Image (cartoon, rainbow, N blue to C red):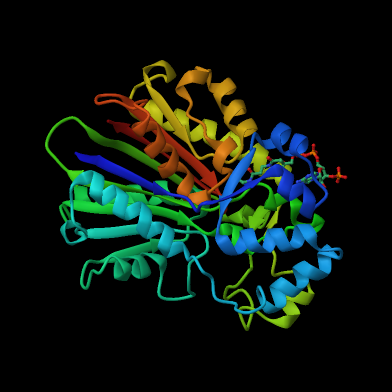
Length: 360
Ligand code: COA
């Protein structure tokens, strides 16, 4: 079996509460808390500096347009990259596993927005770990990214290809949103962070029991970002910005309904595959999209509230980082103990969704 022997996480130091967002756009702490359960989130220093400027700006749309056109002024280079957060989380997981980076056989990472068009996030992370030949794989799987990365790592290890894998979900997604009224539906939800896990092949009953993955690309437009991408030529153009196609877009209601439906389906699928019921599971660690989604799924499946981990109030939706951050916190807080059955599940852009059952 392949067992998660250690976890790690990293979040930027900059905390953005709902009140700061309310100074940038037409929203309120009450609206955000009631609809999402989010009270604060962590963002990159660049996003934070931009938000402080936006909060003070008299003409907010003009300020935001200027940021998208010219960056933050003196530079357009980020002071923090997604690979930096991935590195911090990875180093913590390696330290907790008592391993050096050289002892890892493979890296599988996922981030919705990479540092560069190419090479990919896992490769940049691999280089920052000082490795020169360890294979690195990257996914761009959105909020389900960590579950996909974990399943791929697990399957490669089951096949005997590797013995020890570093699995990472990392995001610096706050950098793409429009924090004025135009982008408020998404801007209040998403935030930055990273989580990592070391997966090791070991004899015995502990480890990943099964993974269940799904995608429905026919509805991709419900939650999509053309921030850059080969969907246009050139990837980022003046015309794309002028036609308002450079911003991420989301049909909130549809995403909500689909998320609840797919979470329920895949959790049931995972339980059925292992001939288990909800009451057999010690801890449910779901993607932290939104408290209302978690509660709706929890109610429908009759999951006892104290078994459903949630930290969305402190971090918001950190996409691919959300499951490994929640897992790391739950483990650190002693909420996941040896022998426990832990069910991970996630849903995101694509739509892509999945569930994984682990005997801890
Ligand atoms: N602050 C205040 N008002 C906002 C807002 C914000 N940040 N964002 C959107 N609104 C407005 C909308 O413009 C709309 O206004 P209108 O009625 O004048 O058109 C109104 O709020 C919509 O309100 P309501 O119908 O009560 O919203 P909702 O209950 O559907 O909640 C979401 C909106 C986005 C919170 C909800 O749809 C949701 O959680 N969707 C899932 C999003 C998600 O989790 N995505 C990631 C999945 S990985």
